[in-house]
Image (cartoon, rainbow, N blue to C red; front, side, top):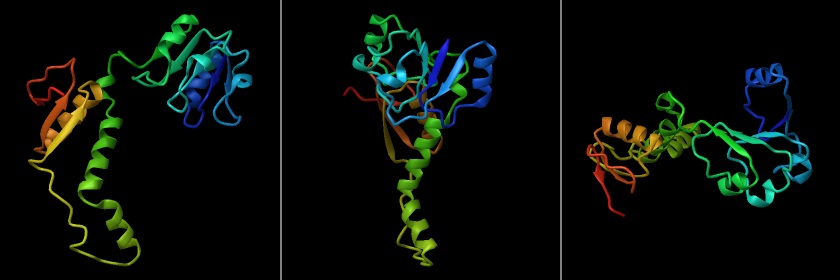
Length: 187
């Protein structure tokens, strides 16, 4: 089976070795971004991330494709209906046990929240330029502030726990979730 890794930067060599040990030919994409029809010709499988939206038009060029693997939980970057129509199986991290221990996305969201609330970037820029402006970058305290979360799935729920631990008030919107620990918004 010939498998194209469309975004090879950060693709683990151990994963490649595992695929090759199983008899698969692994091709690391090195062409002009994004992959085009010629890059996809003859591929039996794709390993994709979020860099390209795999539309019906793009999937039509994948005549031999049997699967798309995505190391993500969400699949909004893949036209699922088109994949199903083409008989392409989708493999992702969604629903796998242990995902609740993966906290990189909510940690990143928390880091961005803290950077904004505490003016981290401009304060670092000023300090790097040799300026100490003690009161210019005071920021704001997050305790007892309200944070709004759209979607209380795995990532949203983890982020809610993090900010609640910082004594923030959590409001959320999710038509499919009722979480009494937080304030639910109806729209």
